[in-house]
Image (tube, rainbow, N blue to C red; front, top):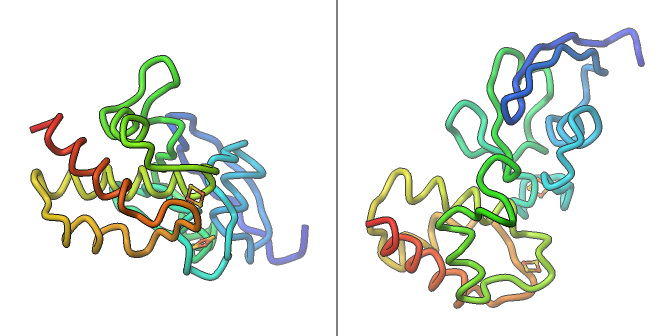
Amino acid sequence: MTDDAVTITLEVDGRAETVTVDADTTLVDLLREKFGSTAVRAGCRNGDCGACTAVVDDRCLKTCLVLAGRADGTSVTTIANLGTEEQPSPVQRAFMAEYAFQCGFCLPGMLLAAEGLLARTKNPSDAEIRDALSGNLCRCTGYVNVVRAVRRAAEATD
Ligand code: FES
Ligand code: FES
């Protein structure tokens, strides 16, 4: 720990904690290292891939671009809070039904971005789906099944 440390309190998936970290710690590292939220992936670390997406006070953010200190007093939701293997959310069910992932590295961020879109827009067009997911890169799927899955989830929750 350097002299430039910050002490912050935040809630992650319903668990509130006060932690002290170096001032240059990013939120993705805080979530992974202090909260054990390893489904928040550390991918490119420069805002390009979306793998580190989490919901911070109702906003989908790329947590590699957020300093941990900025998360003081916030409530963070990760993919761990959306559904379980036994009880997946409608969006998770749709991704499974449409085979919308392969290696799964992008999946947590992709699912959170899709959930965010469907919370804002009930019946998004394919163009709106592609636009909403444009910050989330997938090197496996080609996106066709991803768009189909989000459309399926929209229809299921209509
Ligand atoms: S790790 Fe944050 S956008 Fe890639
Ligand atoms: S499923 Fe492999 S990166 Fe998206």
